[in-house]
Image 1 (cartoon, protein in one colour):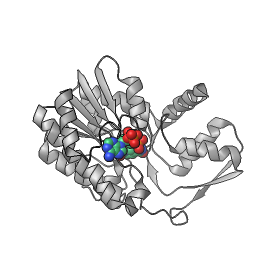
Image 2 (cartoon, rainbow, N blue to C red):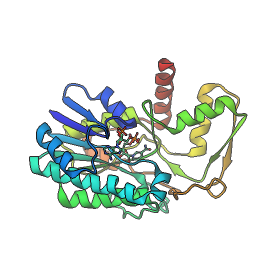
Image 3 (tube, helix red, strand yellow):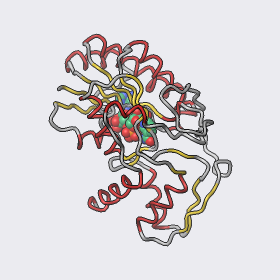
Length: 280
Ligand SMILES: NC(=O)c1ccc[n+]([C@@H]2O[C@H](COP(=O)([O-])OP(=O)(O)OC[C@H]3O[C@@H](n4cnc5c(N)ncnc54)[C@H](OP(=O)(O)O)[C@@H]3O)[C@@H](O)[C@H]2O)c1
């Protein structure tokens, strides 16, 4: 099977490189093809003739999106549209990476794939609008919504906490945002399976279980054996440019038809720590 991964040089791309074996996989970054350039996208797809395009390329700086909305929409929504039209021309299937930030976070139970989108941030709006356009252009595409990604190969929350914990006696972390951390390796494995099973429609893919950022940080510090204190703070006291959903836990029901069960985030964190330690 021929596969093109756009966003192949990012955090998820690093895991897809490791996990996707046995197929002809090409990983591309922005230097190879900028998805804002519709002509380049079309030529690349025409030349590659892939069976699947995994569209992980995005402007992922959530706070940066608030101050650069034009850039955010041109990459995350318009870029996705360019890829969808190019895929349609050659009959390629598309798996698009979306986000829990398409939801407003006001629900008190896990979000289902049928729940209404109501993004609160520019980043969330770019992803929500991309989803709608993709489903119009390619009704059979697969949209994978994920969340709180961590792993080797890019910036991530555990890495930030580990670095801070090594130099500071205490860390203040917000306890009023709840979600599902997701190990890039587990997400990559699920994506490979979804493509092999010809998945269509919206699928939620995160590790199992849920926590606040505070609980996540506490578990991360516990893994190190350091005595750094992790203190609970609130979103109000830790103001950021982009609003984050207070609750963005996504139900795993949509994975059941594909026979995919995701490990817990605690199990995933242990494996990440081992991977990190082994890398030095
Ligand atoms: N990280 C999370 O917590 C999270 C949560 C939910 C959803 N997601 C989604 O999951 C996907 C993967 O996330 P990630 O964390 O792996 O992202 P990432 O590490 O920020 O990587 C982004 C990737 O997109 C590429 N890219 C950026 N602008 C581009 C452009 N104009 N044209 C072509 N490629 C471009 C980058 O290429 P270069 O490396 O060459 O710059 C890189 O390969 C994204 O769609 C993201 O929105 C992520």
